[in-house]
Amino acid sequence: MGKLGTAIITTAVIAFLFGCNDRPQKEAVSAKVEKPNIIFVLTDDQRWDALGVAGNTIIKTPNMDKLAQSGVYFKNALVTTPICAASRATILTGLYERTHDFNFGKPKLNNGYMLESYPYLLKKAGYRTGLIGKFGVRVNEGIEDSLFDVSIKTFWPYLREVDGKQVHLADINGNHAIDFIRESKDQPFCLSLSFWSPHADDGAKEQYFWPEYVDSLYVSDHIPVPDTADPKFFEALPEFMKKSMNRKRWYWRYDTPEKFQEMVKGYYRMISGVDSVLGRIRATLEKEGLADNTIIVLMGDNGYYLGERGFAGKWLMHEQSLRVPLVIYDPRQPENLRGKTFDEMVLNLDIAPTLLDYADVGIPESYQGKTLKGFTDGDVEDWRTSAFFEHQREGESLLPKTESFRDETYKFIRYEGAPDFIEFYNFREDVSEVHNLALDPDYAELVELYAKKCDSVIQGLMADRIVGK
Image (cartoon, rainbow, N blue to C red; front, side):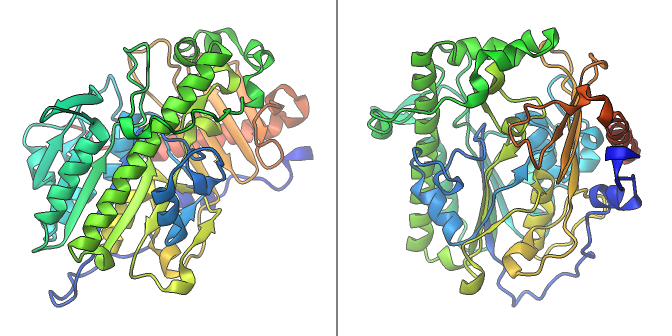
C-alpha cells in the first residue's frame, strides 16, 4: 500500500466524532452544593496566536495571559466551521453545521436543537442566564426568551456617544456584563459575553475601530509579514480561489505594506480593548465576592487570515482560519494543575458539554462534542486525534463550500464547486501547508482514503439531523 501504511478507516475514527459524549446523564445534585458561576467570553475573529500567551511578543493581552497562566490553555483549539454564524450555532448546540444546518443563507435553528442548548439547560437547572453582545444566530419566535433571563444584544457602530463621552462597544458590553454580575448574586449564573471585537467594520475604509485608551499601543512596533504572504503563494492558487471573498477583502486590508501595518495594529488594538474589559470584569468579581466560585472560559469564534496566501477573512480550511484561542479558568482548580498548556485537539463542539459539566447538569446524548472538564481535573483519557471541518454557507458565490478531515499527521481539503482541486498536507512536517501532496501520485491512495473519511463523517452527521422546525 506504499505510503498508505497502516492508515485505515476504523470505527474508532467515527467514534471520536460521534461517540464523543462519554459522560452519562447526571442526576440533579443536592441544593446544598454551591454551583459555580460561569462566564463564557467569546471574541469575534480572534485567531489563535493573537494573544501573548500564544507566543506573540507584540500584542498586549495581560488579562487574557493571566487567565491562561492561572488556568489551562489549549494551543490546538479549532472551530469546526470557520464563520461566525455556524460556529456560534455549534457552540450553543454542541453539534456540527452538517447536523444543526445553520449558516448564513439557511433557515433558523431548529427548536429541537435549541431546547438542548447549554443556556436552555442551565436556565432549566436554576441558573440565571444572560447574553450580552452578539448573538449571531437566528431562532424561532419565543425561543430566545427560553434561553436567557437577560438578553442585551448590541450592534455596530463601534464608537458611540454615551453621556457626552465617546465609548467603545466593547466597553459598553463590559458595562452591561458588570451590571449583570452585580444583579446575579442570589443564584448561580451563566453569562454569555459575546464581543463584536476584533471583527472589522467591513463597510468602513478604516476597518478597525478601537477605544481611545489603546491609541498608544503598537505605534513603534513592526508587524512581521507572514512568509506565505509572498505573491508566489497566491499565484499558485486555482482561479476560483483567486476570485474568492478572501482575496476581495485582502484588497481592503493588506494590499500595500503600509496598509498591512496599519490594519494589523488596528486588529491588535481591538483585542487589547477586549483584554481591558476582561480585567474590569475580573475586578468586579473580586469586589462582589464572586471570584472564588466563578469559572471563566475564553474563546474565539473562528480564525483569521492576516495576509497568508494573499488572503483576508476566514471561511477556508487552513490553520489560520480554523485555529482560535481557548482558555479555561476555574478558581477551584488545585494549584498543582494550573498554568498548564495542552496540545490535544479541542473544538468549539466541546463548549456546550463543558459548560454543562461544570454546572453538574446532564449532557445530552445528542451532543457531538466532549467535555473539557477533565483537563482542569487532571483526568483526560482517550482524547480525539482527528476531526472533520466544513463550511456550507448558502448564497455567496465568492465563498466556496468546502470540507476537510484533519488528524495528527495529515489534512485533506476538498471544494464542492471544484472537485478536481484537492489539498493534502503532511501537517506534522508542513505546518504552513504549502506542499500540496495531492499533486503527488505516490499519495493517491491516501488522498482517496481521506476522501472516504469525509464521506463517512458527513453520512453520520446528516443522519443526526432533525427534520422540521
